[in-house]
Each structure stands twice: as C-alpha cells, then as structure tokens.
Length: 210
Image 1 (spheres, rainbow, N blue to C red):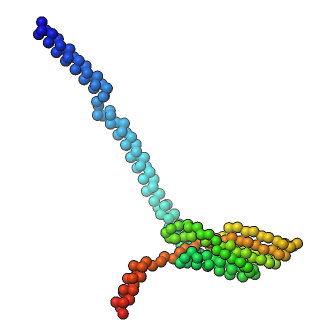
Image 2: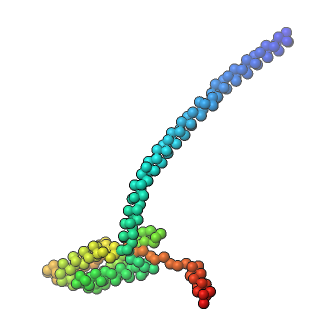
Image 3: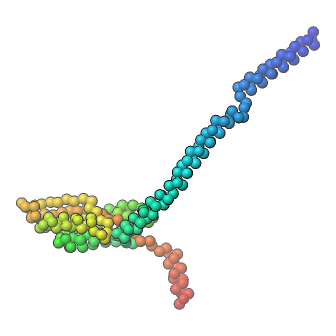
C-alpha cells in the first residue's frame, strides 16, 4: 500500500513538473528568431534611412561646395567694407569720422555726434555692429539731406546703414530751421592682437640677432 502511494505521488509530481515546464515555456515563448526579428527589422530600417540620407548628401556634394565657394567670395568682397579697428572705441570713432566726411561732401555739417551701443555679431572672426548718433541743424535744402542719406547707404567704401531718422522743422517752410537726428550703424571687424608669447619670441629673436 505504501509502495503504491509512493508510486502515485511520484507520478503526480512528475506530471505537475512537466505541466509547469510547458506553461513556463509557453509564457516565455522561447524562440530566439521571433524575439529578435522585431529589433532586427528596426535596425535594418534605421540603417536604410541613414544610407539614403548619406547618399543624398554625397550626390549634392558639388552643389554644396559651389555654394560654399560663393559664400566665401561674398564674405571676401564684404570684408573690404568692414570698419577695421583694434578696439570697439576706435571703431565707433572711425564710424563717426566717416559719417562727418560724407556730410561735408553732401553740403552739410554735423553739429553733434556720439557713440552708441555695440552688438557682437560673431566671436571668430570678431565682428561687431557699432552705432553712432549724429545731429544736423540748419538744413537749408532737403535735397542735401537726401543726398547725404543716399551716400551713406549706397557708398562703395563702407557698410553703413540708417537705423533711425527724425526730422524736425521749427519754421513756416520746409527748408527753414530743419534739423535731423540720425542713428546709424556699421559692421566692424576687430583686428587680431598678437599674443604675449609671440611678442616674447619676437623679442628673443631680435636679441639673438643683435
């Protein structure tokens, strides 16, 4: 009787273990091909997308190189019209001097000028927007003011633009007692400064030669 119980118990335990293994295997769905097919398809799709993008860039390489050369040529032509200076203060002074010269050629005299704020455009190369405010009084002819503004914005020497213009008249005619307050700005490029190390090496070379 005891042997029958032990045998029955062993059979039940065996069946239970087998059923447990079947359930576990079914839940895990142990199939390395099925489990990795999703990620494999995603990876292939990603590589295909990257390949298409890279191929598109490579096919347009000549076009990009041509555009880059055109941009470099444009910058080179504009670079000659930048105000070149070692400091921001000197750049603002150059702007005011240039505007005074244009005013004289237009038959006007600037009664007052002042430097305004500075805006940084780029760190390397160091490009700035320098501003100046000028005041012109006793304008006897509006055509002179028109000529001055035209010569400012359409000159071939410097890139200067009119940012704001205010015209006042205190007389009964359009040419008596007319004054103008003009805010201008220009693009300035700060010249690179030699480092102390370079200066020291140059001094050492001169001492050796002497």
